[in-house]
Image (cartoon, rainbow, N blue to C red):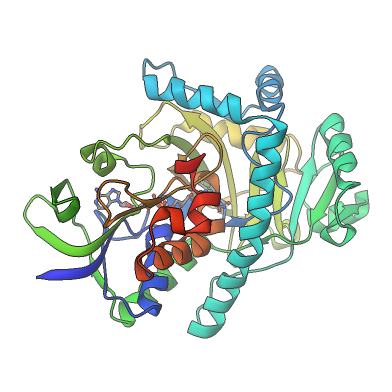
Length: 413
Ligand SMILES: Cc1cc2nc3c(=O)[nH]c(=O)nc-3n(C[C@H](O)[C@H](O)[C@H](O)COP(=O)(O)OP(=O)(O)OC[C@H]3O[C@@H](n4cnc5c(N)ncnc54)[C@H](O)[C@@H]3O)c2cc1C
């Protein structure tokens, strides 16, 4: 049986691609090696932060990271490795940390940011879904005087409606658990947050109800090519043929390697700690501890802390020292309180060196489309990516005919 579109990988990118393709009238099959209950798309912060946060490779990132390392507050850990890909990635990351690249990235985040939030709002409304979504802005909290002053200066050139400098008492209102070591805070009003687990489960259930075919607990381990096309993809026991194939396998590159496609993307391990806390101390909105790279997001019944960027590790286990390090950095700037019902989690960001996703058609095998490399912003941009992937397939576009691919895809930058 030949299917229409097969999507391999049911993280947020796979689900959003499935959503837009299904809405365009395509027959979609989604295959995942798991049961879609715990990939990177589940344990992340759920911050929808296209605006005013900046890119990961910003000018000055290397020096700032070294300063953080000296203070013992660095989120970055690079495991010793002889992996040439990691060195190439680090080189490109350092080369991308310049003013021109930074401005271009911010411009693209602005362009897709408004659209992507609009889609989350529309999907919830149209399909009657509940993502625990709140567009209340993102509080940026500064624990270093110098970075606070720098951000205040940057704000002078921004539209005044997009941010609010908070006084000490206003900061306390937004972040009641913050302590007196906090130097200042700015509320960036356009950002939003949601509960990623809820989004994933609601989207999966909706698509299943709509007739999207889900083949779960089925790992795709091989691809067969014929006449410049992918003929089929194979698991250990089955073969699946289709007109079109979408690769949205997150940080995993096995299938791209079989295609001999070298992707400038590495797994960047991160952690989250989800817990209950006294209601009166819960933050009012998502909060970025700017100098610590810690995000705190409130949700209906709990709060989540996320942090860390470990390169060169593929160990899937929670490493206790990393959890401890997040907690102790966080506790330096917060009032003491008891965390209840703690859940620790780790996952891998599919990280490119310049924050650009790896999206677009394979140049040789035209019915193979990549939807990967969303790094630390996959939840944020997933609807925009899903829309772009659908347009590429449904309108039978080549990469060169898609402005979105030419502008936003890391394959062209
Ligand atoms: C600590 C942390 C915090 C984060 N915070 C945020 C945030 O606040 N905001 C934000 O926008 N982003 C955030 N991110 C990033 C975001 O979570 C990711 O960019 C996003 O989840 C990636 O989605 P994905 O669909 O590409 O990959 P995944 O969610 O990893 O999904 C890939 C799927 O592919 C399947 N798969 C892989 N290989 C195969 C195969 N061979 N056969 C079948 N199935 C396969 C896997 O089982 C998996 O289900 C964070 C990430 C981390 C780690």
